[in-house]
Each structure stands twice: as structure tokens, then as C-alpha cells.
Image 1 (cartoon, helix red, strand yellow):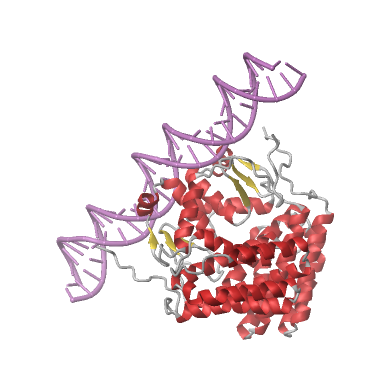
Image 2 (tube, helix red, strand yellow):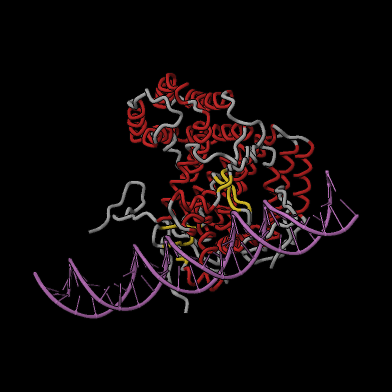
Length: 245
Length: 245
DNA sequence: TTTTGATATTTTTTCGATATTTCTTATTAT
DNA sequence: ATAATAAGAAATATCGAAAAAATATCAAAA
């Protein structure tokens, strides 16, 4: 349930009591990323109120936050639904992510120093120590966090919090597609090597190579997801709205 | 009567009645951009409820949306305040904006076609026709829109809605700084020429020149704002919280 | 004087209920 | 039958008040 505070750089003063709206926000986000809430599906307030045991206001606040960061779409007077997915959108996502991370990575290498290197080495160590055996399509948040932290460390010296925030948003969006398509185990074997290669290129300040590796790292994921056939070609607005009895 | 579908793919149903939460969202956004709501200041629910004539819920929803897009900061159990401003943040903002718009512009030029050119020509025409006499620091939304539309047209063929959204967010953030510092009239004379030069470079498919012009276009704004002395050096968390008696 | 701790007040957050809008279904007229 | 329309049902959006949390006040003790 209630968890410890992550050390993501944000100063978490000791008594940061999470508000109900925030906790349901995180719960919803996690369920969307995990694919439990299916893309395109209607989010009925009544149902969510039951499922998450919260009242009207905090629920709406959470949904409004999710809507401005792209996880949920809002239609005036018609409520909310999980953002639909499509091959087109995934391709756009990956394309944009490659662009943004290329900048962030090149800048980081430009500004690199010992601390930066150490962050990468440490993050790599942690991600490489993860048990590679888990075959489920959705790995637990803790594992997911290590992975994210490695990627964040690579671009952590880019000197733009805004860009880092955008990269994180794009990461989350991508994560949703990945979990949707159960590509984790398919890839498990190679990912470690890819990570190592990226790390080494960065430590050697070989920006061109690092960018190339990182970019293909992302593009491969996209290819796997698409070939898995779990996505419709066009934006799937209304994917099988069956009311589960 | 089938509702018509606009060229951007989104079906526009005839009657899009705006919800209260949305209209107060827009009102708040406008007031923040215009500088009426001062950076760093506390946003008391009670006060806002009076000022904007809305109830609790829509107000909170609006603030929550604004908080995820960076215009407002949320502190758990302590409410909301207008995002603080600082020279550091402005520099970061401009830097990031230059990076992102460079990509978007280069991609657009890569994908350029007749429609793209026409959008730019038309948008330029409209912005150049604006009355250049207004000396107030804050120009009315209509004028501001024309200006935004020109800049949007330049990057409109980049083939990534997400990137366009980020560029728009950065534009809005920058706008806030600009209005804060009353740089409009100071610059009025030159801006027209700058726009023309950018337009011509794009139409000639000279990406390098276009990027150079666009980048300096933004950097100049930043310099003017900073030299106007209306910003504190560091992140002004608590800009003069004098309780007005 | 400064600190401490209990109490009162303000402010934020949440809940329950009501008002509005949209969706569904049934009815009527063409 | 089909289309238009109106009543009824379902869902969303909003309001006002209660609950929870933070902040301010002030008296007593060190």
C-alpha cells in the first residue's frame, strides 16, 4: 500500500502526506500503464468511485491531471476515457522520443563530469542486477523504476528540467504500449547488452555512437510492439466497449 | 446530418458547450499569461471563487490542469500558487525552446509541400497586418493568436503532434515572461523584419538559415526580458508575500 | 526574552446531494 | 418503414457544507 519515498531528486520533506486526489492519480496512472484500463475505454465515474474507493472530487481532480498529460482524454460534458492507442501514434511517439533524447543525450555528454558518470555507472549496475526471469508482460513498478532511472541518468546532465520532464512523459507513454504488447520477455536477453553498449559509448564521450544506440534501442521496441499485432492501424476510438457484468 | 470533419482529423460535433471548469481554466491561464496573477503568489480558493464566480469543484479542476502543464504549482495540502519565475528558468526555457523548435522546423522543411508554404504565407500576412501602435505590455489575445499562428505554421509539417504540443507549452511559458517585462513596444519595430526573414528562409528551404534566425529571434526576447530587470536571479519562491492589510 | 504547547482560526480537501447535459427509448407523423 | 420528436433514464458537472490539515494566536514556563 503506502510506500517509501523515492529519491528522485525532489526534496521530500518528512511529512508529505499524500492527498487522496494524488493517490488515486497514481493508482490510475499505474493501471493505465499496466494496461488494466484499456485504451479507448470509457471511464465511468460511478465505476471508478467504487473500484478506487474515493469520492467524486478527488477522482475528477486526478482525471483532469491525467488529461493534461495525455493519458486520458476529456470530452466536454461527456466525461473521460483512456487515451486510445494506434500504430500511427506509437510511431509518432517513438520518433519524437528519439529526437528529444538525442538532444538531451548530446547535451549531457557535452556537460559531462564525474558525478554524471557515476550516476550512469550506478544506475546501470542496478538495472543489470535485476532478475531477468520474470516473464509477465508487466514488470512490477520497482523493476520498472530501475530501468527508468538508467535512462534518466543518461540524459541527466542536459541542463533542462523541462526537457527531462518531456522525456519522462514520452517514456511513460511508450511504457504503456510496451506493456500492452507483452514484449518484455521477448527482449529480455538483449536488453542488457544494449544498455551496456550505451553506457560505454557515453563514458567514452562518443556522442554519435551513443545516440545511434539509444535511438535503435527505442525503435526496436516499437517494431516489436507493432509486429505483435496488438494494435489497430487507426486510432482505436471505440475498442470493444463491453460492459463487464 | 452528419457533423463535418475538419482536416485535422478531429470530428467537431456541432455544439461544443464549454464546461465551467474549462472556462475558468482559460480565464486563469489568460490572467497568468497576462501577468495579472503574479508569479509565486498564493492562489486562495476562497478569493478565486469570488473573482471568477465559480464553485469549488470547477476551480479545483482548472487548477489541477494548470498544475500539470506548469503554470501553477501544487503543494499537497497547501493549495496552489502561480509558478514562480526566475532568470535561470527563463534561460532554460529559451534554450529548450530553441532545441525543440529547431527539430520541428528542420523536419517541417524536410516535409515541406505547397500547403505548408501557403499556411506560412497566409499566417505571415495576417501577423504583418496587425496594428503596430499598441504600446501596452500586454497585447490582446486576438493579436497574440496571430503571432502564435505564424510560429505554429513554421513548424506545422513536423509530423508530430506531441512535439507541436510541447512547442506550444513552451511558447505559453515564454509569453508569460514577455508580458511580465513589457518588451512588446521595445521590440515592435524589428519583429516584422525578423518574421519576414524567417518566412523567406523557409520558403527557400534553407534550413540552416531559418533555424539561425528563429533561434536568435527567441534569444533576443530573452535578453530583453532579463535586461529589463523585472526578474529575480534565483527562483523567486516567495516574491514579496506581504499580507495586504 | 525565548521557547513550548494548547487552542482557535483559516485554508484546503473531501463528501453527499442537486442541477445539467447527454444518451436511450418509445411514440407519432409522414 | 423511416425520420423526427419528446419523455425518461443515465451519466456528468456543479454546489454547499462537513472533515482534515495547516497556520496563527497567545498564555505559561524556562
